[in-house]
Image (cartoon, rainbow, N blue to C red):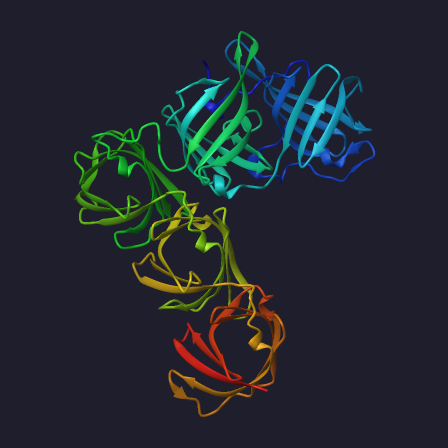
Length: 574
């Protein structure tokens, strides 16, 4: 059974007659070079753009070969495809003219207007299907800027079938999908790389070596709490100037090289993907992948050059407490002791030899699990030794998330997407700013999981602690009405002068007057905390205050993280 160049390098197929070949520009530029336009009465605007072939059948039989098509708004088009030679391929570029009328797509020669092919077409959610009367059916996926954050990880091939038959050649190969839309694959000692996107249920990867001709469009489906994914694709390879067609189904695991779980000299507990919590007492964005066959790859963020440094290595555990790391030439780099704790998700490495002798590192395992208590919006209300920040974190159940910060003038200064997972007491947050590498923090919930406390270190080794409160849609109706500030203490001492301040609460909105300055806000409550979202921040970020209402008296605890001052305000209902 032949799988040419390991799945994603599956050599992409040539042009038979014309049979509908559509091509697209280089994916590396997203859709900047992809044509766009409104179309006209002869050129359906939904077709203008760049398209990748997913499947091609004739009378229901797989007849796939690769085709990327660019359709311009002026009625011209270009297809990039391959022709099958003896045991190789030849790249072909084909220019043509196109038009549409009454659901029919027609392809003609550019100069002579001689019709080459025509057939029915249907566009549905950026997927186009072409049919003709001969039993031909072709499906293309449109170039998109979308990604699926659940795909972003390091994956291991667990099983591969070709036309229903088991093929173990690729089992154990490593496929890394990054948040910057890049991917890399280590297969048979070779490394391949490129770019990727998703469109609906389709996952498209493009090879850097030949982006117009080497790509694959696949369908994908997650399982096992998103820690496994099944990829289905059509493939073809050349044989004696003909295409041999295949259907390939691959199952990939997110956390381990399941084909080789380790052995006596490679502790199975260490096999997997590990994210650094601390490197020699400091935060250094680092990821290490240890495979069961004794190979491994490290990824470390180079802050000076803003890039990820990748190194391959070899490893072994001569006993159950010692580890030795070698370079690719089998020269020892360092050795030391290790211990795996917290049900196998936390490891300590003590370096006892090599240039890093005396260093201690802590890593947390990528489990693919997610503590769903994180799901929702979180607002900080206390932090130690950090500059004051107005911040909002949003954790989505599927493992994606967003973070945003505002300055003291209410201007958003930064907004980032991230991916998250949990392992025992640790939260793993994969960040774009570190090339997809993660920051690991220790976390603790309290107050019926409405309070979140995190611990972490920075790149200088300073330890931090920060508290967040979970957002809510609830509104304590006891707030409704008008309130006047009647007393205030600062760090336990009564203030000699009380500011002239009033508040009016409606159901979810409100207005405050502080020394004559109006402030409009929206509000919600959660247990004994109130969240205030000010108009000056577009109601996007809020402050949280602990409160108590008794006998028409409201007490607010207001903590200023910038100054460390705790004020207790008393408001009386009018």
